[in-house]
Amino acid sequence: MAYYTCLLLDADNTLLDFDAAERQAMTDTLMHYELPYDEAALDTYHSVNRQLWDRLAKGELSKNKLFSIRFGQYLKAMGLPDNGKGREMNDYYEDQLSNHADLLPGALSALHELAEVATLAIVSNGAYKVQKSRIGASGLETFIDGVYISEKIGATKPNPKIYEAALRDLGITNRSRVLVVGDDLLADIRGGKNAGLDTCWVNFTGAENTTGIEPKYTIGSYEALYQIVMEPEELDNIGVRNRRHMNDQ
Image (cartoon, rainbow, N blue to C red):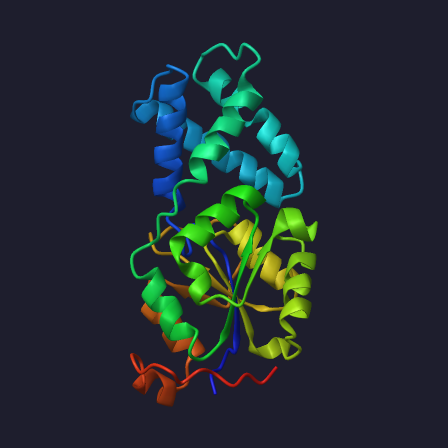
């Protein structure tokens, strides 16, 4: 039996390549509005957006507020007039983003392996319409037992309620065998710790942790996750199919 029999996985930059999706959706949006779409424009948007999502994770603003002010703040940072189009631009961007289901390299193969030994669920703060579209188009749902998105749950990571709702729905009662896996220290790792669950920081880029939030594990590859989740016998059977797990729930 695996060391961890339930994985609560973040979506963006854990399984889905959000950076690539964001870049293309933003390029499409800026082109549509006939605005500059060079590297400086894309970098500025990424910085503005990251700051706002960090504020969301800290409880400083709601998701609706984030969507309302995001493009207004971006245009201001670029020295461009808003002209009352900030929210309209946000909605157009979200529509473009929903069309990009870019996967991180090896994500599907990793889920194929992990699904043999554990219950897998996605827990995401992303916009419901966008995430449902991207997750559905990506092929991830083939290996996933549940998808829990903050808008539907009524709680946003790092609020532990979103994890509690997922565990109830999945019928998981043995919390010692649950692992929260995600790339965002403020949302995923703090959220998992708030829920009293073990946590694993996905750090594929070798980023420095300056938050003071300490995950139980840190990984730089999906293969490293196998070492945390699987017992030696299961590791020996990597690639063997139809050994579907029997969970100690």
